[in-house]
Each structure stands twice: as C-alpha cells, then as structure tokens.
Length: 126
Image (cartoon, rainbow, N blue to C red; front, side, top):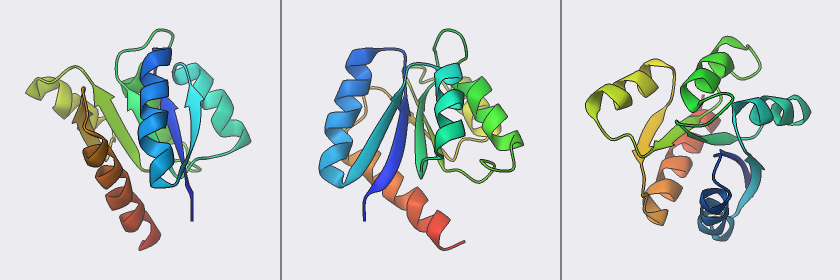
C-alpha cells in the first residue's frame, strides 16, 4: 500500500530530493512550498504523514505544526520536522510544537524512510 507524504519545503531542489528518496519506498509525494501552501492542499486531502522544513517564508514549519495540532482533523497527523537547525533548543522547540520526530539535514534516505514507517505503524495501531 502506498502512503501519502506531504513534503513542505521552500527549496524546490530539496523537495525533489525528498521525492526521489520517498517514491522508491512506495510513497506518493505531494509537495508544498511553505506552510500556507500546505494548509491549502490539506483542505483537499489530508496526507498520511507530513515532512516539514522548519525555516520557510510566509509560514514556517513550527507554526504550521502548531496549527495542525489545533485542528481536530489533523491533530493526530504524524509530523516530521526536517531542518538544518541542529542545536538542542531548536529540536526541543519542534517537539514542543507537536512534531512526532525531528530530523536534521542532510538526512539519510534510510533514516527518513524508517522514521516515516515507524510513525505510520504507530498511527495504524492507534
């Protein structure tokens, strides 16, 4: 079964790279260029999991994560923050905003795929 993954990042090259990592793992990838774009796309269809960049214009990943956690339709949606911000305070901020996982860039393909699979197994077993 293919899982739907929304990749939210303002860098087109990063979105393409993540798509190249995820498609072979049987993931259907939907791209959004920032938090506002992601919220518009979620109105049409809620993905199985989201991978959010932290630093983006218009709406950053932390703000998007908080908004998603407040909405009953997306409050349990598995969310992975993916960022170049690697210091402990940034990771803590992301997890406190409601992210299930915080991965740092550059991310290894297997780490990303394993994290998504782990979160989806937990979500399915709820």
